Amino acid sequence: MNLLKTAAIVLAATTALTLPAFAQAKTDFKVAWSIYVGWMPWGYAEEHGIVDKWAEKYGITIEVTQFNDYVESMNQYTAGAYDAVSLTNMDGLSIPAAGGVDTTAVIVGDFSSGNDAVILKNATELADIAGQTVNLVEFSVSHYLLARALDSVGLTERDVNVVNTADPDMVGAFQTADVTALVTWNPMVSEILALPDATSVFDSSMIPGEIIDLMVANTEVLEANPDFGKALAGIWYETVSLMTADTPEGAAARAAMGAASGTDQTGFETQLAATKLFADPKEAVTFVTSPDLSATMDRVRTFLFDKGLLGSGAPSADVIGIELADGTVLGDPNFVKLRFTDDYMQLAADNAL
Image (tube, rainbow, N blue to C red; front, side, top):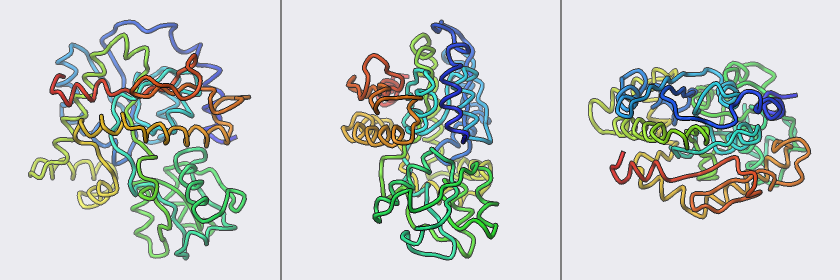
């Protein structure tokens, strides 16, 4: 059994034992994040005092921890060890929500617009993937991207052989003779495409707005401690404003984030160019309140149901409720476990943090 499916099944059984029946007001919070262009601001903010600044404003403490393994960061959040975690919209539904953890997207930071890619070795056309073994993090957004790519050329997963591969192993795997096709995300994409025999044949810019990068928090913790959400929003928008500034300070921030992600300023800026970053909170609010998000999440939940990732014996994709920013619910309104809100982003847009 692959790692993500294990998480979805095992954590669903253990969540009730690891989380309190209800959250209470508290002052100490823990945030997990992993290496990805859209999440690098969290590490930079921790190292440069921005986290402490906003935490102190609200009389709380926030510990920000980097994970080298993305899946493990989600597992730890789902198990209750962290109050918030960076993840994608699809993984938020398939791991914590499917594991029974009511989760709210506090920050909609960006969507991938080229950072996730299908890469072939010694081939230049997507159709050439037919019959190949494809390495990816199974049931992650990479798997979703593969499904969307295959559909675009009239193929299905029956036409390939998927092999589950951990994200830290991708670059090394591609350099072995046995690996000829893979799907992954930046910074691995950039490293692999620098190899002479690698070609991107499909990427997330071809499905804009579908792979969304979030900072989510446990809903019960958030409701009991709204200042935690305000601090997260303050940290995010101050850091992203600095990161995107055309100033020496902005360049230094991009260089630091690039180095922390295993590249340099130029490499990081290349990844940013493949990211639709919502540096302006007003733009984030527009995105999260758009009817397009409902269509995207409907497509995502259908994919996850087809893969058996919405819980053992789930009768349909409606088994888990997804609450949108306007209060409407996709799926079961009595079992809402993933929520989108514009509350904290709107506070930032109104300069009310």
